[in-house]
Image (tube, rainbow, N blue to C red; front, side, top):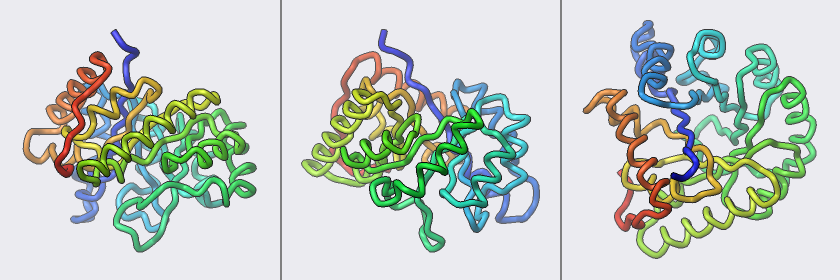
Length: 255
């Protein structure tokens, strides 16, 4: 059997629903318990500058009371560094962030941002927080992440998920090549963004990828089949692809 692929579950949009009514329901901490029951390996939460979904109190609760390790997604700003050093999550994933975007639109530019990222990452790693950089599947970005001192990279799978036919095959090829390169130079390789039941299989079958982080689709699917059922189905699709070592490339668009 292939090495088990870790599943990190992004619970941001549980908080989005809660914030729509400015109450306490649904509670992200309750969602965290459901993730643990359904076999998730970690929680991911993105604390944005504008606090549009996850809020500071959520990070504190998830870091201190959650049953699973917390992966804090955040921009590389002094404010977020201070929050991370106070909360001490298991891991941090640095992502680009624009106030006007609906969701993260691309990878962090580690090449042009190297000089600023080196001390930022060093401060987090010194506090025993593992740092991943969310990047596009490009060799130059992988190499820069290594030079910056990150523990891992998370490959942006959004373009693969959104592409069609030959373009999707090309994007998948970029993911495979970048994952192999990351592993070869000593970086742990994660992947995520836009993955669903139809698109996760090929990515799960890449042996160098050790962790997938999936959120929006799972929370959306939970509306129809329940959160634990959504997670269990994703876990089953991932595991089947991982054990087989391959998966038929989906040709239609992602859900």
